[in-house]
Image 1 (tube, rainbow, N blue to C red):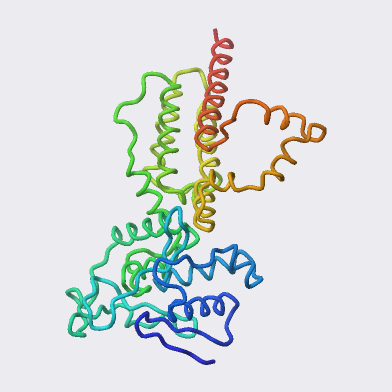
Image 2: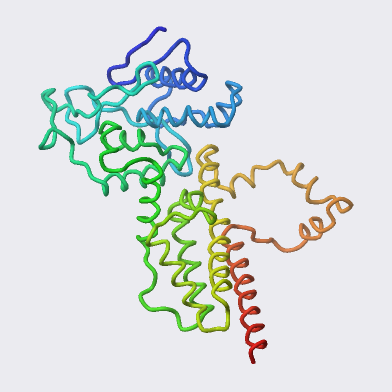
Length: 355
């Protein structure tokens, strides 16, 4: 296997052999190294990689993840994935960034921990290790997930973000599962519940649901990490359930009904919020917002679907009426109100039964 080293970018381009994702990533590294793809230029999206190389979505995603791990590309909201700015050449000052790269598909060894100084001297924190702790690792992981999506998150990617060796993370966080739990608790705790409970049950449940919606919007990856069958024990997340159940206390509902009502509301909010990350990924891949994408749909195809009164009589009727808002916020507002109406009907029924 022939290897071509690019010292400035500290990457190794594999030109023969390897898996499909390695070969495609090697070709894109070559284009970046040769200047065919300059800093700021968009790199092929996952869909374009699928078309150009005839690979599956998972393979195309691995390609972009490899380039992100190398620090060669970065995600720009509303634009897509672009070539990152050139790294400083060897001998120039560097602030905490490690030389990261690959050799035959593997991470460059322990030297990745070292940071070149102004005179080529390796500068290290006291004790021989870069200053590192759980808080800093979680902060970096949240930053990666916020900007690049959950698919890009790995212990290696977080290590690259911090400029340290991957194995050094395991001294503070045992693995990715624990890292995700810490990330979840951190971002939920960033926006705490109101200090005082709401004056009535409906306002209380709505406050909790809307807070969760804002948190999911701030961190689009979060919803996909939540599980309602195997919940993660995150204290700040548990406070939301505690507050929701408390809002229903003393209204004639059983413990099971209070728990089911609060968890059903949380599941509705989370289930709709999953689309935040999907939309963020689609916008990154296409460089277009949902509105821009809809505007570029072929008008003839759209009219063919929406204006066939025999097959789609209701679509046809709606298409002739006023514009309908089916955005995520509108769907959330509508669905939340209807779910609260349902809880209210249950409370009223229990009141009649005991009255």
